[in-house]
Amino acid sequence: MAIVVTALGTARDKAATNPWTPFSSITLAAGETLILCQASDWPSAINEIEIKWNNIALTENVEIENSGNVASEVWSLYSAGGGTGNVVITGAFGRPTAAAVALYKVSGLASSSFDKSATAIGSDTVPSSGQTAALAQADELLVGAIGTEGPNGDAAGSWDTGTNQTTDNNQRLGTTGAGAVSNITVAAATKIVSATTGGIASKNSITSRDWAAAIATYKAVA
Figure 1 (spheres, rainbow, N blue to C red):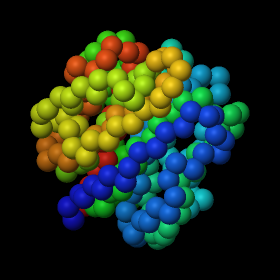
Figure 2: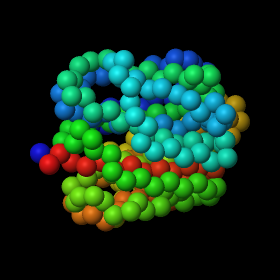
Figure 3: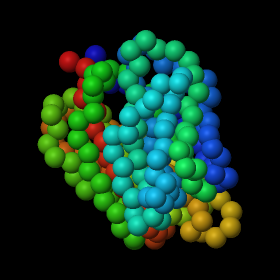
């Protein structure tokens, strides 16, 4: 079964809304997977959140924080039975003042699909997750999430290209208003690969900002 990725859109919040419902009435068929990429201004002391779809919890597959300035995460949920429901994000001790998310629906992934990840942080114009270890199998989906401490109007830059780079289904959104560093922007992209070479999520020519980059890989169903 081939992997099929559908970009479901983006959302942003700059009001510490808790709980926050960034997406409503999201429908999954039986056997489809929901993947959410989040960037947030999230101090580690309150980094306790729960993300649910249709009241079913997603699993955090990878997370990276850049000194309390920006954090990036990738979450997923395999839906055995399908259904329709809202995506709700709740913070146990509150929510960040700035956050942005990108959502994907994927068919063709295994029920326990998460495989490899890589993360990195920096402060420049060329964010990169670094390369994951070799993949468990040739047929996998790469999902990249890059969070930057800056507004939606920053230079988006370009995703680096290559057979093991996340370049497809690009989604990007950031918060706006007040000073630049009071905002957070998420950039997400995917790539379906057919080799076990480790994956990378990286961009070039963005506005120079503090950034946190993450990549997660997911196995196709046998």
